[in-house]
Length: 222
Ligand code: T5A
Image 1: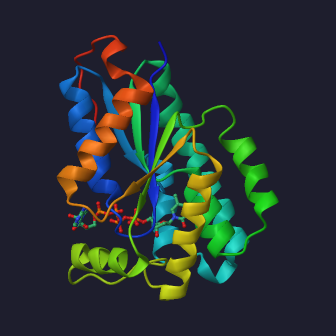
Image 2: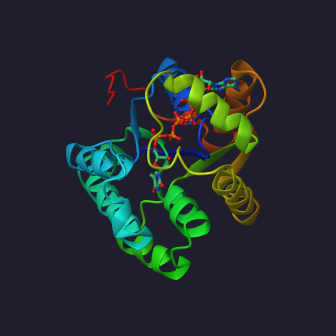
């Protein structure tokens, strides 16, 4: 039986990494094999592209080129990690995926949305997420949390953008949640972590019924 594919999306500092990890713990407690991963990155080739993108080295090439690089990283990630895991029956929990390209490069970065959809069709194909959590906090609060988490290290390529860019991201993710209500679950992530985690877990139980998945005991992590 194919594994389930769950993605976490949202702006900076909304709690995606925190809740992807917390969901992984819950699923494993159910005896489900879980592959936790992230984008950009998640596979050796894609991690190299992550460095190029987040260091800002590709920024002078422009938004179109950055969108192509995100897609190329995704192609490697899908081919070498996500699809083989799903085929083995492992559930994949991914911190960001193709929706981030739609919103960061498309909505906030003004890359042509038709071009982004075309790349998504070619690269992602049928490997669409079964369930996507869109974590929502006001842009200012997300940036505050991201600053706090980062400590002394500097902002990356996208964290360093102005507040208006982060507000556009938030609007873009809210619109996505409204347009795809069957796949995208909008989560108010201003609540305490435990409450947010409980809400996510209830939705996974309802939508994906992990209790019916075959019990598997081998652990997998990035
Ligand atoms: N990108 C990515 C694109 O432009 N296009 C693409 O196609 C893709 C895939 C990735 C960057 O690349 C861009 C988007 C990004 O800018 P990244 O380092 O992976 O960069 O950055 P983010 O995904 O934004 O990760 P962050 O760490 O900034 O945010 P998270 O993962 O949403 O937040 P998290 O879990 O690290 O939490 C941040 C802090 O908040 C606390 C946590 O403990 C942590 O300290 N926190 C809470 N505090 C209070 N209440 C809660 N409910 C909390 N939940 C978490």
